[in-house]
Image 1 (spheres, rainbow, N blue to C red):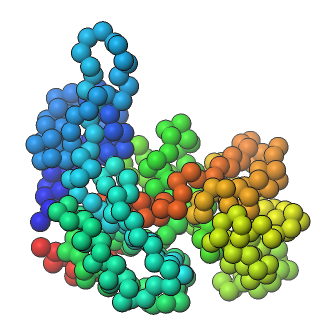
Image 2: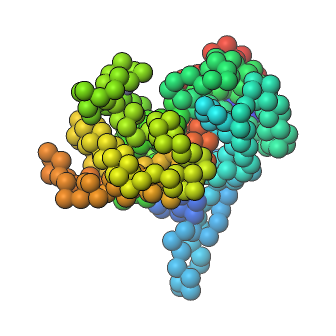
Length: 368
Ligand SMILES: [Zn+2]
């Protein structure tokens, strides 16, 4: 099947590096590929030739070609986005998202189900397969929250998904998959290590170590369960005074009758004083985590940027203005521009790079 074919074509370390560079930087030239992968020009030419013959890669005008330049147009390389799909799935407390994602990371089709059930998951999977049509689905990534969802067990959800596909199916923490998408679309100038804060119903996160042509190293971090008040309320994790209790959307919803799912309109009811307390709590939590990890670049993600800036970002930046960590660095806080489908994109990209836990070992071993 096609998943096997992809594994056959993109096999060696060099091939994976070249394919990753082309998918990530459409329009990259062969010369740039040599520079980035440190492969010889002959090796890159050979690899690209095979990819083109297999229909994975095509030629386009080079990304950095200067119009009107003397001589012939420089040639760049791009992935063939209709060659295959990977499927990204994000399981959350009140909804589930699915997306067919092209090799470049673009979402081709997306679905969102509110108040899902196992039966509806199964029927949406049929819609997904139908939408993919002739284009093969080569890998599936399932993002799960750290804590249980109320509508089904994680194993029922993943079994339903794994049984529908004969390609490899992986599972990973939602926040870690979202961090993966963040890294995929990030500018190269961003520091090689950053902390990604995933605001879902709770507060999660991941530290990301960027690795150039290799997939990044991602470590799930329970950002919400850093204690900032030893005399605070007892948290469900067993700790006291967790950031989660002071600043997570779930806590805010419980205490102030807001609804973050409605966007800015849903959170406008919070007073300036409450917003300040929330932002300061998160700031203390982030300072603790980033000091331990010696990271000084933080990306806030999970909800639309305007909501995150309104609720957290502006106070965070104000609270941390002038702050220097013990290593002398200020803490830079930015808001993710990826939007609502970051988790879906990350799950799909991660599955392609085989990141996460194999969901159903038998299903994977027996895929045809
Ligand atoms: Zn806790």
